[in-house]
Length: 311
View 1 (tube, rainbow, N blue to C red):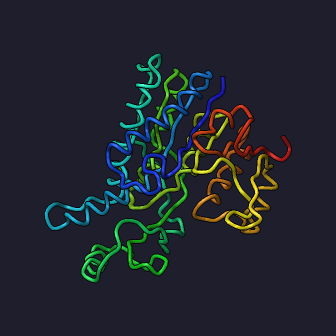
View 2: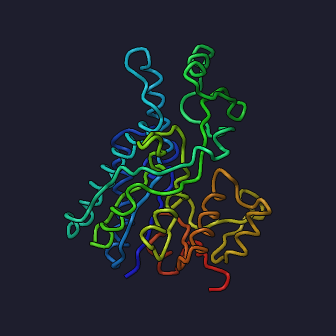
């Protein structure tokens, strides 16, 4: 029996072109549960992580629109809110899909440690939330937020994206997995925290979800990391006339492609970096594919499989 960490992409519950209604997200959770259910039925132990970019963006818009009526919550709590409701949708969909596992499903609001000395805090670059007019820019800067241009489209809040250094609930996640539970954890990269003066303090940042997936995989001693995205394969020459799928890749090949700029920072780059890290830590293999091809990819019949170069 293998332990698999499944990292669902940022558009897992809000697909391109959707507005993100509760009904849309519930329907997408049902679609994902079908793919996840196949993995569980095949006998694997599973931890599910997921992105939350669209959800955090929508909630940030709501916070901004209502800022004169109710207090604006800090970003780390906005992330916790989305973890909670997304975990609820995923668990309910799995409950319907896996009647034999209904007493072994759990979603954890997960906290992830970051280092405030990480240099990324000096130069925040991750845009979040709504585009801001002049009044809102002044309000944001008065709160101490960093504001900057987003691809020439207007001004948005910018936050840091630090590397994770540990997961607060790591022991709990491992205990649950070891006892046969399917665990949803680390949603949206987790709630960023730091230990300050003996207490836990929330940090306004966005942690890359794939890097947290690797951290959780390390803690639960996972055999396989499966990153579910919008395409069946990793592509070389993506978006060009020379585009071609990759079915198998070693860590040396992956590192070479990364160094040459083959994989963009905002899309496939972090996934390939995370795959290399997981394999260097001793993982068996990594799958990158779409949800519709997940089961076939784990059987070796679809997707892109990455392995250590000496495997």
